[in-house]
Image (cartoon, rainbow, N blue to C red; front, side):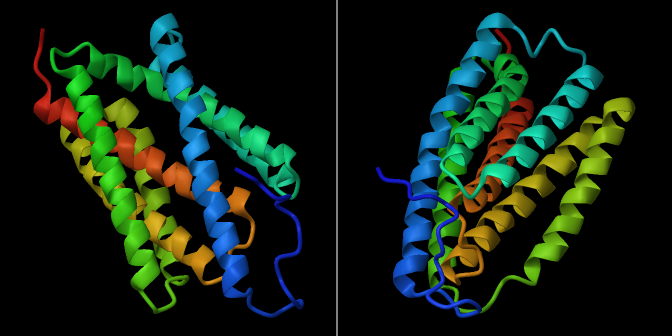
Length: 233
């Protein structure tokens, strides 16, 4: 597995679209880095469940830690994306995201069929990713305009999710989870298509976007499975 320096010039000439070979190189490295990012995510989730670190925080404290950590890491990734250091920062971010996921994972593991639900969520997320990746390779039209609508939808869901910390509405939580799966599945398609069209030439940036979407799909799918498919001990 060989990751080139992300900041190397992938354009043959400034202002011109990348060649098919260059686009494929960015896409291959994005897929490799995505696969690698799953390792620290799993380690972070395991550590969080084992230590109970995430569960020790109240929902509000957890939200503050999550927002501060996530935006801090994303700022650092943006600053280092043009060097190999960016890979290490991204992997550190995925470890942090695994820690933040451990609260939900621990809750589901407390169910009688918790391990099966986690595997089902993992398989479902993998199927969605493969489906979106396949679609991105066969759709010919430009999907870049879809990004702004997805971004608006994501912001609206984020606001509603923060509000639900205080409202504590199960119906709203379920609705938001269903919407999130749809929106972030579309984000996977959008972000991979940008790479294939030569609109995104930095594989670290591409990996970050797709990783966040995969993470959100898995998180919300697992939450729904816990609500509808969980069995008490």
